[in-house]
Every structure is written in structure tokens, then in C-alpha cells.
Length: 157
Image (cartoon, rainbow, N blue to C red; front, side, top):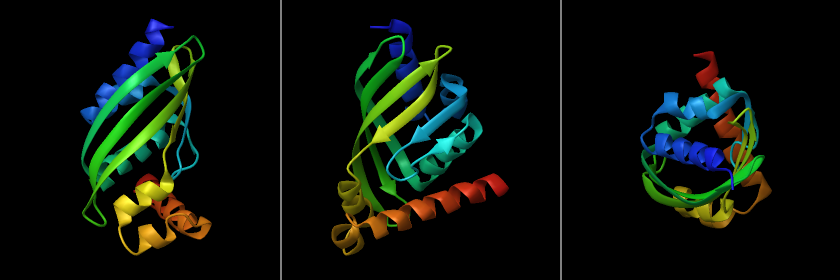
């Protein structure tokens, strides 16, 4: 167990829970990469932080809880729950997420979140889209393309 890395993961989630972007950014290595079922791969601290700003803007009133933080000198894990209202539909979402981390220079250099896309889709999008299409590769691509377009639009503004 590496107490410094456990504290780093905890600091990140405490900052996320307060939408403290500066504190979140301090946890990330300049060359951080982030991945999840929606954004897939986002490279570099500036772009990853734009992604978090976008997510917190789309997810109205995000409340996050985390638990089961573990870490060694190289990697770590945590489980977190994101509760929010999905702004495009007004639907309530409770997303259970498993996070994996890699560290470099005592900062997070890789952050990957994994969750059940079909379950998320049903909660966020409702019927018929989430229920009927949430599991299809085409629907996943549509959601991913929209997220990438929103992120790109933030970069150009």
C-alpha cells in the first residue's frame, strides 16, 4: 500500500465532489490520459480538464462518493458513484464506476473509468433510445461522436 498515492486519489475525488478544477488538475501529470466508455481516449492535462469541465456542465448537480481506494507505487484503483441529472434529458442518473490509475512522478498519468454503458444509457436517455439502442455499437458511436464534438467545441472557443 502506498499512502501517498491513496491520498492522491482521495484528493482527486474530494476535488471532483466540490467541482474544484484547480485541485483536480494538480493531481494530474501534464501527460495524463483519460479513458471511459464515452470519451474513450483523451490525451494531455489541458484536454482532460476540459473534458471534466464539459462533464460537470452536462451532469447538473453532480454528487460523487468514492470508496475502496487502493494503490501501490505504480497503480491504483477506486470505486466511485456519480449521481446527477443528465442535462439533455432531465433524467436522474446513478452511475457506478470502477476507476484505475497509473502514477508517474507521484501524479496520476493514466486514469481509466469503466461502467456499464447499457445501464447508463437506459438511465440517462430513457426510452426508447437507452432501452432499445443502448447496447448497440452504432448507438455507442453516436454518443461518443457527440461527446467528442462537444469537447472539440470547447477547445475552439
